[in-house]
Length: 86
Image 1: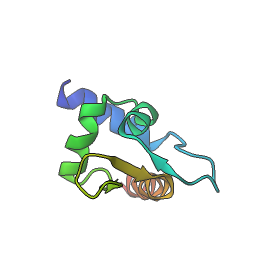
Image 2: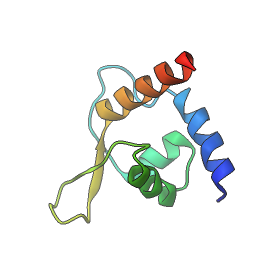
Image 3: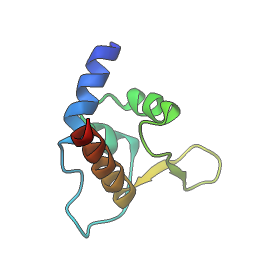
Image 4: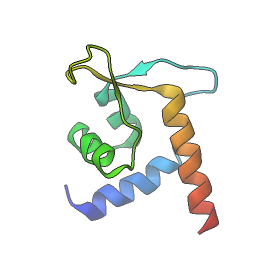
């Protein structure tokens, strides 16, 4: 997947509603990818670049990554505010 496609998807992802307000829970990489319109492998790249919040690991051994829905919502709102200021 090219960088242009990834960047376009991230811009589009900023306009998505990840989870309804008040809904919180652990999300798998596949769920996060589907919500953002990305391939699951791209999620790791975005985390490495600091473009997505880091996951927590339920097993403590970096094998079971999960994202907290409220953190993704906060990230999304922050990205929206940043894009509106530009």
